[in-house]
Image (cartoon, rainbow, N blue to C red; front, side, top):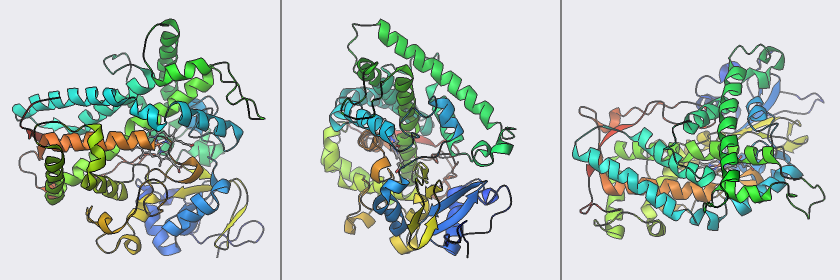
Length: 481
Ligand code: HEM
């Protein structure tokens, strides 16, 4: 029985060591290790990360208490070193503490950058980028080459995101934003001692502070340069995020709010940085897991290709307007998110005030980790075939990914839920369906579906550890864009 300072009952959990607490129990894949511990201690478990108390949530019911019933108490984010450096003292959206500042930039972002109509306005951008990817893959398919699918998917998502956010494509090789974004996600996901054991953290034994400063410096330079170019080039016609944010500079964020914040250059940069980091890797990670599972499960691949054949036909590519008609595709995407949630712990939350959950005391400033990976792998929720990639499970269950069903939370839920969900979902469904419609995907010679390596690497997101290598074979009857 664990007790808080005031003698109140804390959730059960493993014994914590002096100084490091339970950091040593996280291992390389904390989502898996904390699932095992939760099987012993329960779905509301308390651990200590260095000096910080943390609560790990591992069931849909407990997730609903955190993200719905007590949403306001858990709507803040912890202050972490990487975000402080990267977004000029948490001036971005993802790590801003809960309060009027966050509320204003969240509103501004959802209204001006990520609304459904803004997302739709990038339809031709997505079509063009995907068209060039398909052309290049068709050429490679004709020569029977093994293709680095992870790299190709990463490039197309990066091109779409860079053009949408910054108005330029990857052709400009003076910088590598993807590499920087991946580095930032790794640092955010790493359990940085500077955040948990400050007096040891100052020594920077893990080299995290050095890595953070380096990544922040490179990304600040790129974004500053791009903003300056937008300011100088007054007659261009793009409608990227920089164009949408610049007219708001030096204006109050929300003149009706009693807390008046004026948007300055650092606010704009911080918002753009968050968008870059949030958009680059997330959709690409989901797509590469989906293709990996389809290749490992030829039955599902065949069924998805049949759906595409019936709905689209073999003489043209998939268009965005077709997506609504592809119900099996939707189930495949859900099943991918269930087994491979892109951000298995969402983005960490911080408890704003002392709270009681199911009779347990959760002290103010506790870190909250919702283990969506554990929920997706729970037999009690998904029955005994939990490890199987079986999209048909969603025929019977009307479970959706939009934050209402706590069994499946790829975008989180509640006030801090992902505001880029619409954009992310379109990218995932479009790129995935196009790749599967235009090509058959074969394993390099000698490999059987079950041999496919599925090793994960942990960060804020959990992508494949090794790139996915496959041979495309042309499937469409006509080569068209
Ligand atoms: C498949 C793609 C994506 C996935 C799986 C995903 C997932 C997530 C998750 C799990 C969270 C945390 C939610 C929570 O704490 O409850 C989040 C937050 C966020 N996402 Fe996404 N995301 C995706 C795409 C995008 C895109 C394309 C953008 C923007 C262009 C974006 C912008 C953000 C932002 C700004 C936040 C922080 C929101 C806040 O703290 O108020 N995401 N996302």
